[in-house]
Image (cartoon, rainbow, N blue to C red; front, side, top):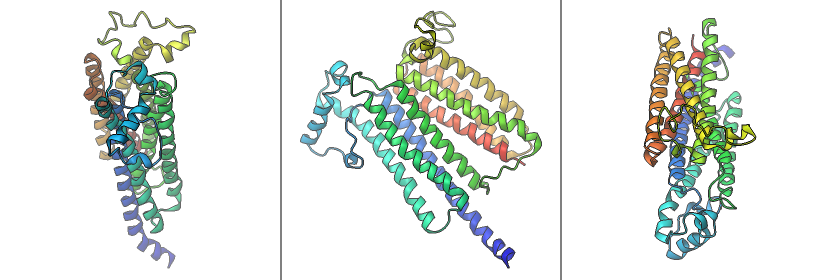
Length: 354
């Protein structure tokens, strides 16, 4: 009787898992859009235009001249206006306001995109108990990410006319971690497994290598956030040399020496170039190992990984040589997201390969 009931239930359970998995993939796509919008917001220097955090109250844009003037008056009290944008009129302020507004609005929409289906699946009893902790972790990370975003903005409203590049790195990294949890769980559900790791003995070494590569790419994202937060990408706009040298002469000018890794724009850009090059070589080496894998579910993401890493490397060079225009800068940030996605997909496929 029990066996018969389990057999009858299995098709419904599989269908429910795939429904949840597809919903999570939509959430991942929305996170991708969020990351790109965040990149545009940073590149257009719009991130400090909204100096208040009022939960859902500021979801409604200013609708009158008086409302616009109130926001502009608040912005005029910030270090960014007083030291950099003192020339701005109300019309100029409106041009930078919209990107930050869209960024915040998309973040709130993303929260609802997760919360409403989650509650629906929960009420319908379609969320299996082993899956619940992962979904609650996603919700917690999303909520924390909103707080981190405001914590980042506040760093540019006190003394300095720019946000802290440390806080920017935290904000971007948490977005990638959230995406990683969402994507991995979605892939588990679509492939019909929750927590199970079925792989052959020959796949074990490559499974570790592929997952290590995904984690390494996350580290490269942190170095990229440092480049973005310090405007290091506009300091040495040549490749492969930096001011005529492979290693810039200004690499170690700060004392103590370790501060160069965190504060010196020459060192920050060189380090990002270095880790990006290592990523290119490691990803292509992994692809070479996987290109003839017996499981086609492994070959597809591995091929996409190779395309993504080559494309991202070339895009980084183009962005640098062009002095980081908004279009290429945002594309490079989005490319990092796609590369991380391809690496995670590859790691998941190898670990679940048969």
